[in-house]
Amino acid sequence: MADKSSSAGAAGSWLPETLLVHGGTLRSAFGETSEAMFLTQSFVYDTAEQAEARFKDEDPGFIYSRFSNPTVAMFEERMRLLEGAEAARATATGMAAVTSALLSFLKAGDHIVAARAMFGSCLYVAQELCPRFGIQCTLVDGRDTAAWRQAVRPNTRAFFFETPANPTLDLVDIAAVSEIAHAAGALVIVDNVFATPLLQKPLKLGADIVVYSATKHIDGQGRCLGGVVLCSEKFLKDHLHTFLRQTGPALSPFNAWVMLKGLETLPLRVRAQCETAAKIADHLAGQKGIARVLFCGRPDYPQAALAGRQMTGSGTLVTFEVEGGKAAAFRFLNALKLIRISNNLGDAKSLITHPATTTHQRLKPEARAELGISDGMLRLSVGLEASGDLVADIDRALSASRIG
Ligand SMILES: Cc1ncc(COP(=O)(O)O)c(C=O)c1O
Image 1: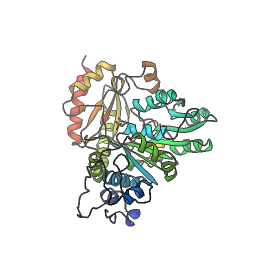
Image 2: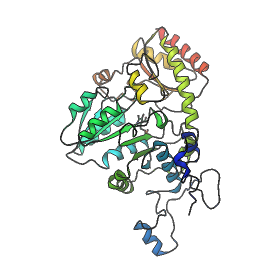
Image 3: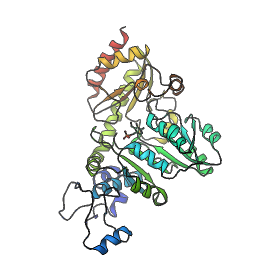
């Protein structure tokens, strides 16, 4: 059996930087330094009695990697410690985490309230998939706390939102909205991808469940897909555990190993990316041809006070609008030489996307307008390159966007 000593006991007092290097380590009998990658589908038993005991949950060993796996368990434990949650379960993707968090406990006849400003696939799950199974959904302007209260019905079971939201960086007041949800007997599920586990702690602010696409900052180097659900022991036992085991959105051990390596450098990367993002946001704000800059760390950010209250950093994304609509935005993108056009985010490489034609192209123009997603809007995920090189690339693109 693996030695868990490196994470036992002491982990409770470690600061995030330490936790992210050592937390959750399950060392095998070989005493390896780096976490071992257990690429195995199943596990063998010494005796038939042991197999029986494992299936009865009387023996704590592993059974089958759809249920659990030592490398995946290390990733889950490290995330659990970082988030300060009672339980963590990894999933194959961020969308598997979102879908499992919702569908593991909702049933036909239930109602959920969700923020309108969300990543397109999250919106699909809330607005289109849930209703197909008899779970009604009301979408609200997440920034408007009163709208959450007004949307509550007797059968409301969950509030679901992303904050900051993709791509406008709209914020939801987690503490205020959680109070409303709890008074109505509903659970609060927060997609904390944009804030990262370092810059915002939804559970401390009153939320019940946090989900991540580990594909983003947690991997941080654009390699693997992954996700994780953080919740209470009770939610795990009553709902999530069986749902994940029987439906099978399991994280591969290889991807879990990559995520573990990603977590080791997460604080260094996020800190550097936030610093560069702030420099770029300030630079853009002073430029001719830029209609608007949205960055949680700027004093002119519409929800700056809330950002200061519930986040401990500005985030690594800068959203801005070039004058001249889609044509100017496309000229900007096509003139970039260093920043790459991609809809991914949280990578070491700076990536930029035009939400209206990519992540949010499924929405009707009126729905995009309601969300404040204009044809000139661009979302930049700031990477680890030198800020001067990024600014030079942006300046070149901005000149190109103005011609035409
Ligand atoms: C806010 C947010 N939530 C969830 C997801 C889904 O993550 P994944 O692509 O790992 O399924 C994304 C992906 O872009 C996202 O930006």
